[in-house]
Image (cartoon, rainbow, N blue to C red; front, side):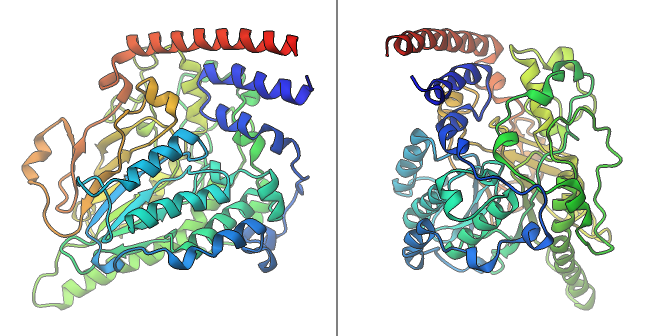
Length: 500
């Protein structure tokens, strides 16, 4: 048995039982990543910000896929959008997930959970690391549902390596992200902010926020659980290549671009790229200035009109990564500012939770999205929802005026173990056409709803597997049974390897 093939199987059985979400993708692409071309240690500014024009959409894959783009129909105009749906973490490089999507999109529109021609679907990252699979996923959705799609890339979209990436000449994660955006633009997928539903009663701004993670969401008092974080097999550390801190620092920004993690207590960052979240935050700031101007124009129109102005448009921000500690899987009380380790890390794998917090997201995301509304407009006047992904642990709650929603498809194993609902579906969060729910429902503590006239309430979700997935006793049994099955499969594999 060749060593590479032995390692291929061995990594699967070692990593997967410990809950590493990327184990499947790591093993699936192990062989191709071994052949990755060397990556330059430093990037010039031209390489840092974009790929050469000669490399855009010129590969065999892109050319063959591009032939069908012109036939995609995205429904009506953005000004006439009616409903907005969300989902994240489709991971369609998993066969079961791709089949789920095919079946779901081919269903007739029998319920409010199915987007149509006059609707938007927000996808909060992690479709696939393969551009061809990303294109296939978008095509399935648009060809069947004919809805508009808003997309923000996730950590899987930043992975490089393999035949497809090598054929495109991609050797950096920033270059890969540029390619993802090129693909989206060629297919009519929205990656920049847009005002939608302008011709209807409840228009809303949809604003994608680019970011990464920086350990600012680390759990206080849990560093002893992260002692080996520098060797933790988080697949991003292997499959991503970012500019150096020096190159990121040398990038020039406007004077009003000011986001920094200097004020946060960050330690034991391991192999997390330094300065990357600050770089993305400062890039986002250009669009934030434009969105603020939209709200200021609304305010000025109201001052000049003898008739009182209508309410300002709502705001739906979207990121793949988690925006604050309250959105972490094990933060059980959004109103509590202190992490209660003894009460909340009450499951079989506390060390995984502590390490994941470091790679979950960035506090800069929350700082940034809360800076969008101009200070002269009371934040209470603008209904604000934030959609995120990444953790594969559903969330839906209101904190400090913003509703945070995570609606992942996740991995088949996570649905099997009730960490994600087996009945996961597109979630309707906004209706642009009418006041869809009574404000009195704000008092219902079982709902996640902050009172917006266009907002569609959802069931309040803090820790899904505990509240609706059978609790920690069932989770412990499921994990035990899964480990037992893995041990049996490992022994069988080793016997087969010896006999081959």
